[in-house]
Image 1 (cartoon, rainbow, N blue to C red):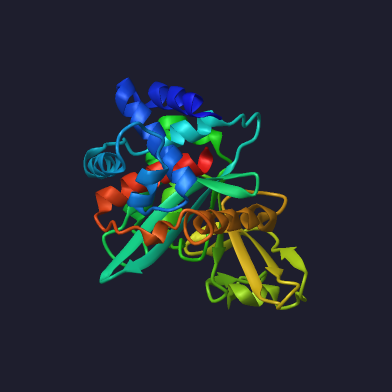
Image 2: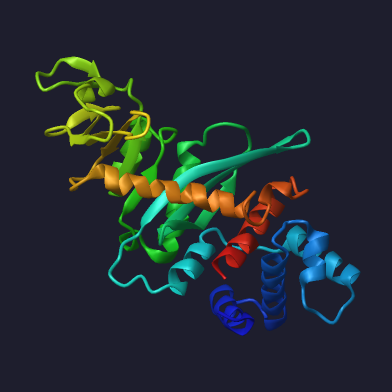
Length: 296
């Protein structure tokens, strides 16, 4: 994809005037070339007839005032690639870091693509720690409003994203999920006796995996449960799903693609965590431009 193709895609999707789209494309190109969120370096990397200081001020104004509708990135990304009949998985996770006395905490929903992940929607959370069900639901709904839930095979998430109310929401919207649960989660054995989920897999040896027969009550919902022990250290992984599937573990393992994404945006790529921005709106805009540069 060259810069003119990028301009055409952005112009069609965003509906902005040509000058703004052209500058956004230049900014994407600058981030791609500079491989950093240091705006002075980005300004020097942008190919433009104006002086570097003028470019720098224009970049600053962009991050102060640009507006992008939540979910618009999902529309851009899902239209960029030929997915064919494939229904890729959505991946949900958080990334966070501390800058000075400010803690930056971002909830991201990405799409799995060829052993990597691409952000579709995100929100900068108002505090440290876990996200609310409301924040998660709003991100998913912004994506589905643009491209439809039927485009995706389901949601993958780690043990942070568990709970009766959260699973109830996912069941309500009929979104398949494959989510890792805690070994200490309450469930029942084949005789209906109360046990911890980890107990169901006590016969497993390192490198083995198994499906629990039928459905078991987990966090108040009847779910399919699979377990696997790492061939390296024997650590147990338990994955619960609201959908019948051949192998929950194989589906869930694609969740690791989002860790690759965070590495690419941060220390192994664009040095996202080195930005001096702390305002939530500016960080939101920066991630939009970073996503475009990452995809490009």
